[in-house]
Length: 141
Ligand code: HEC
Ligand code: HEC
Image 1 (cartoon, rainbow, N blue to C red):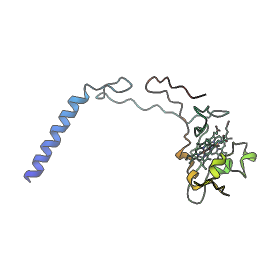
Image 2: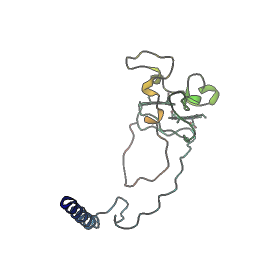
Image 3: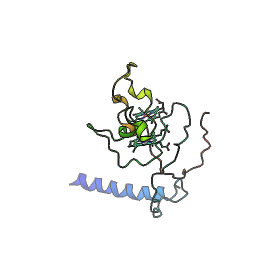
Image 4: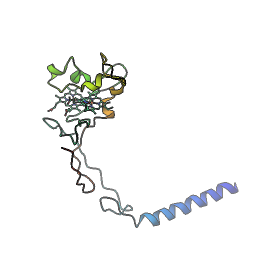
């Protein structure tokens, strides 16, 4: 009983202390953290015709289209409906890189390698959100 009372006093003290500290902290958007948060912008995934420019040669290219409908699970890879060796021409989609058919020893496989099976592990769709802070990064050309 005594222990519980002590613990709750400690918890209440921490709550007061952290509000006092937070009042002086500014977020990246310049808001004080103790003001009401703004509703997040209702952004949608952007479709970019012709693809999104890469920052360097071996970068996994970003996904220039919506992805919500394409499921990847044990039996089925929705992305390969368009990006596989067998379907890419018909779907007018870029074929997955040849590297996607190699195992770790460089052996060429018939199906996409398990190292490259979960496409969204490396390829991310884009929402067109403005960066929170200025950034002068330039891609290697
Ligand atoms: C219905 C067909 C279709 C499906 C399914 C599909 N894509 Fe695509 N994808 C395309 C087409 C077409 C393009 C080319 C768009 C363009 O360049 O205008 C493309 C482009 C891309 C690119 C850009 C390649 C580059 O070199 O710039 C990536 C990465 C990509 N898709 C990943 C994915 C992933 C990951 C999935 C599954 C979540 C997926 N795609 C599912 C049709 C598809
Ligand atoms: C482990 C990271 C990784 C995973 C997982 C992965 N990719 Fe890639 N992908 C890359 C990299 C890196 C490149 C660029 C270099 C290359 O082709 O290997 C690339 C290139 C591509 C390209 C452009 C090929 C070209 O010749 O321009 C497409 C399309 C693509 N990937 C689709 C997919 C799809 C579809 C999947 C899922 C079946 C997938 N990738 C899984 C890393 C990955």
